[in-house]
Image (cartoon, rainbow, N blue to C red; front, side, top):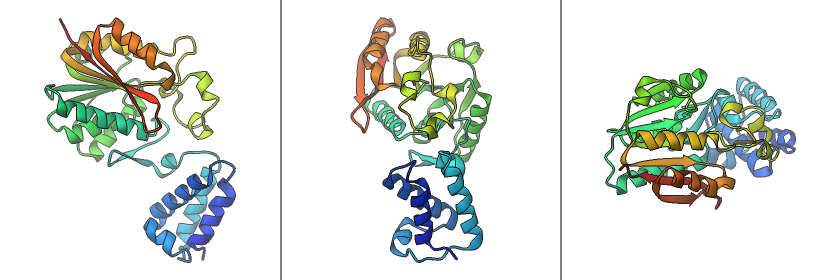
Length: 290
């Protein structure tokens, strides 16, 4: 039977041209934890641990898929985000650590402000990781989430059930919204991590993103890369309660332009925040309704 050490050697041999050594090691440990159900500590301490034939065959199948660049989260069907487990598939983006930082900022902002925990809206929800994480931590909030993709919404609904929270999911297009309840409700907080990757950015991205994750959730027109920010800022300016909060995650290249968009819509207390890599990636603004 194969051993943990042999599996590790197979991963290094077949994935070294796609991922760096640390990534290969992380992938190997993740697969072994998931398939063999052993801890990372045991994987490191006992490399001669034998693996059953069925588990070995499954690992080989996973490794074959990994060699194509397919993300491990899609292969395993799940991803961790803000301490919760989410189902993921090619209809939704894989939740990112930078977005966890956005959720953390939202929670700390709500906790330190006079904002009533009222109605929240997440625009372009994908897997539902943002609204579900917020609802899990702010149980009194009434949380809604919209997405244009029915497939994404099906996954988001499954994730709400998985994490035992109640979210109002709405299928609509924020560029041309038509849903009556969406258009007639005022919110205390609006959040969005909309598409913001340009075709120029695409050239620098890893193929496990560009070849597998949903393009409608990633890419924007080269001639109007801020199309969603303009639309959402406009929507928020007519649908936020007085002193309501707006949060965006954005392309690091467009911080100044997004601040200008928010200024033009009379948002105040605009604050940019850097992510874990020191890049401007998030913004918070207040709408002081007259």
